[in-house]
Length: 186
Figure 1: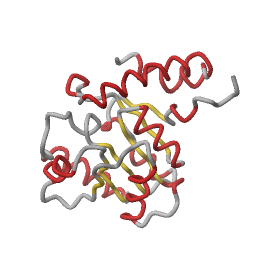
Figure 2: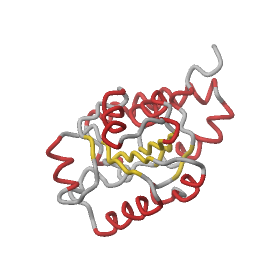
Figure 3: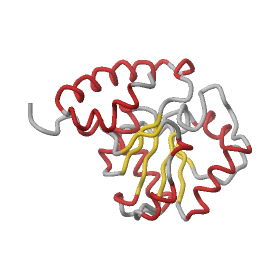
Figure 4: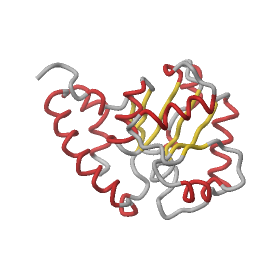
């Protein structure tokens, strides 16, 4: 087995929640753009609108100096309803892990340096694999409410379990430092 075969499925960092991420530290480290998945990263699939608490949280990220983009594989109606009248830029039907949605987000924010982008999400198969393919710094968070996962996500979670086993076997040190804490929350 060649070294690094499964590294695209390994996040740069794991945090239990998006609210546990030290955004100031990321900014000080040189990152300037944050892509955040919506469903089960910011809110459960059951939540259909931004709350005041979440708006304040997103505003706080922007106040640090970040350009912010909400990105989702979900459909236009779901994402437009969720964002509502708020000015947060978003991409729907991103088709993560394909690069198309990520590239649209980069264009929308006029970001040309992928090494300055942080992508945050709750799925290895879409968020982490896709973000790593783009050259982003990836942060995996635990899903807010796995019971609310829609069918494609439930299928992805089965594939995720397969790749986690492969990483554990072939990339033991990276598994221990970056995936084990995630697995322990499942």
